[in-house]
Length: 256
Image (cartoon, rainbow, N blue to C red):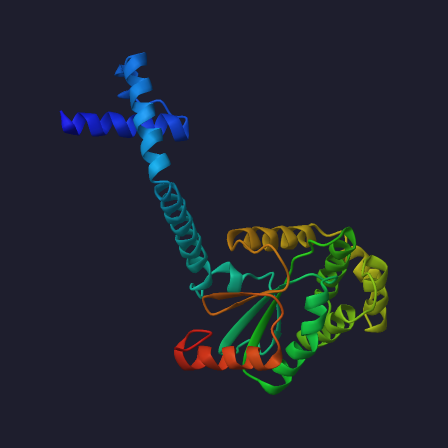
């Protein structure tokens, strides 16, 4: 009898707070249902911490599930995050440590991080950097990314990195006009660039990047992926250097 009471009590709790109707609850008369709803309400009013604890536990489980989902991507060296043929790779393409940056050409913090990224590439000849366009701030950002991806098709990684940093450090809002001007100054074949801008693979690459950022629950720029860790916000040279060295030492971006 006690077990059935608890079962019915839980069923009514589900009705009251989740809007569900269980088969057990349907066996209750209106009077019984009202009685049990009163018991549940009275108990929760006297012990409101139960609701708080339940919400905290739900939040913990959701975050844990999210982290596990991320790890399936970041911890897998064969993940498209690292191996996609569409990746824009600078630095040492065969480096022993890979740093992925999700960026937007109009992101102020991304611009601020450029000198630190340049210093990292200059001082660490064994780091591999993957640049993933994430044009989320404006229509101009999308235009700039399309131009950059078209430029990538005709530049060597070293030349593209030079183009990328110059475009990043261009003052003011960046859109197609600014990106084309930097590309021209960098020696791009403008006729070829015009044709490449219309290629379907440009949109495909951006869609791939968007799906990857969604899978990793990345919502802002800059965001870095290093090892299995995700770092949100601009990181200075000292921090990047320390984290890269930690990956080499213990396989994590921070060694305990």
